[in-house]
Image (cartoon, rainbow, N blue to C red; front, side, top):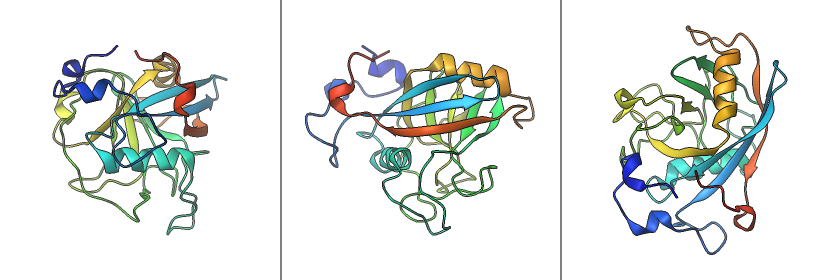
Length: 208
């Protein structure tokens, strides 16, 4: 079982709990997954534990973009991560994806329409495997996100952390090492071939 204090979280008992009903406004944890495949022929899952107790709107945005349940956005593109690439991959730092509009890092749209403001910066970038909103400045959150591969404390206070990888960091590192470059432009394709939400009855014992 993971320790909240190790992730810069207040030591609330509630973050240890699992929801006992389908997703509602104040569930504590939700798990989503990505299936990734890229030119090195890697195919695996990345499972993300969403901290929606702390950042409800950011976590719900990410969850819904994983399921695609919101349909089509104002740009005429599906509000779904399926088929989108990791467009920025930097070794020793992070992998970034989630551009559902253009696929190249120049587009972003949330389930709320356009962009939405920063909720808070309660959760810190204290470990590899942090999942946070990529942005272009203050209050500019859309669909883009990143997964860190090292501790990145310098990002605290600038990017909203809403989850952590609990399974599949080996896949994250494989994408980082196999497709990353120091200017961030991938040398090989890394695409999210599928994404969705894991029903709580199938969670099993996946805590890292």
